[in-house]
Amino acid sequence: MKIDEIRKLLEEDLKNIHNLKDLNELRIKYLGKKGLITELNSEIKNIPNEEKKNFGQQVNSIRLLFQENYDNLKNKLEEAELNSKLASEAIDISLPSSRIPIGSPNILEKLIEEVEDVFMSMGYDVVDGPEIEEDKYNFEMLNIPKGHPARDAQDTFYLESEEILLRSQTSPVQVRTMLKGKGEVPIRVICPGKTYRRDDDDATHSHQFMQIEGLLVDKDISLSDLKGTIDVVIKKLFGKDIETRFRPSYYQFTEPSVEVDISCFNCRGKGCNICKNTGWITVAGAGIVHPNVLRMSGYDPDIWSGFAFGFGAERMAMLKYDINDLRVFYNTDLREVKIFDRKEFESND
Image (cartoon, rainbow, N blue to C red):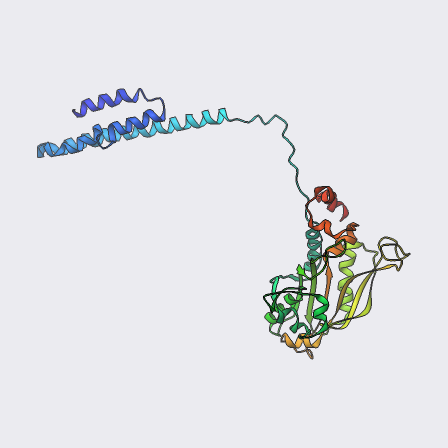
């Protein structure tokens, strides 16, 4: 078939293309392995040398004609197909939607975020560490050597051997932070995180709980610095009129050590069931970092001093939001936690 005949046939075929299937069949007819335009290339060997150039130009011309029309039709047909599909799948957005139930923000995370915001405003960093910890960091470098009765009291979860365990406190994070400081830089950090101890789960106990610990290492640090820091946090969480007090206590990693009490926000010191008629509620343990802990972490206790504190996030949240069962924090029953949605939190701030 001559080039002019193919050109006329192509013009007629283009008029009969109505969808993408027709267009694909047209492509095969002209550019397939045995297509009309493809076969023109095989005929060039039979063309006299002086006519080959002109013949090649005519073949290229009809190929370009086909490609230009093919591309235009393809774009138009694809657009029409898409518009048809969109029209058939249209959603009537004027119809009322069905309500999708949503959860509530985690109560503990909300409290921890509050505490983090307060400490970051005072220049503290928020750091974390591994929950599977080495005995060295969890006990020994905190002045709790092997055989110390405190290890039995904490009922630790050991893994495979007594050298690897689930951390019973977030204090190992403080040790790791001091080691990174190499005894040369001041430290201001808080270490919120999950901890584990052997305990029976009930309304006031859990085998896992969230702890928020803090550490400051600098020069000339005293209990008054600790008292002022704790006071700022307590007033932020429970109100500006809440007072704090220290009572002597004992911890292996601090000396002196104190228990931190706050004035009862419920009875204002008069005595009630929340404060057990004492007017005060114990919320944390704290103290001045023990010289042995500083020394083992590379800080010279003759130059450096510091304070550390720790309290349970669950206990603080139970007090702040009047929750009487610790298990509320860990279940997914929306009937129990729905009152602690974002608006409720914001209104309590």
